[in-house]
Structures are given as C-alpha cells and as structure tokens.
Image 1: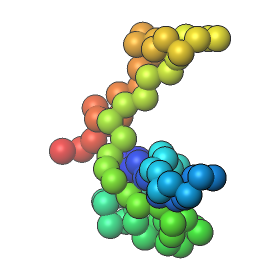
Image 2: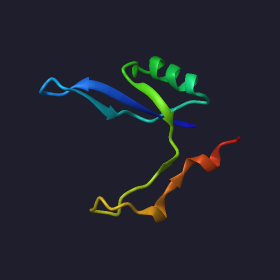
Image 3: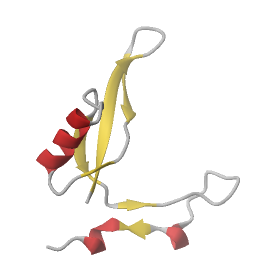
Image 4: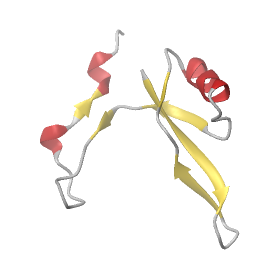
Length: 77
C-alpha cells in the first residue's frame, strides 16, 4: 500500500504552514511510519492511505480523469 505524508514547517515570513510530503510504502500505518524513520523522513507525518492519483492534461491544471490510478482496488480486504 502507499501512504501519504505531510510536512509542517515555517514559511519565509515565519508562518507555520503544512505541505504535502512524499508518498511512502507500507503494509500498515505503523509500517509506513517506521519506513519514514528508517529512511531519513522523520520530519514527515503519515496521515493516511493514498486512494487515487489523477494527473492533469498536458500543459494545464485540468484533471484528466481518464488516466486516474485507483489504488483502492488493489487492496486485499
């Protein structure tokens, strides 16, 4: 499974902001957290499972739903 993370950090003006972090692998939530610790991503917080990815149409910010990757259908349960 693939898990999503977030990163909290101060912006240039000193405001605390939240950004999307890297996607990480894991067989469970705890395993994904341990992956972060073992791979120098201890500053990331695992926040959930990646359900799907929808790319944008080339050269735009318009979603291309025909190319959606649905990760939820690959789960065993």
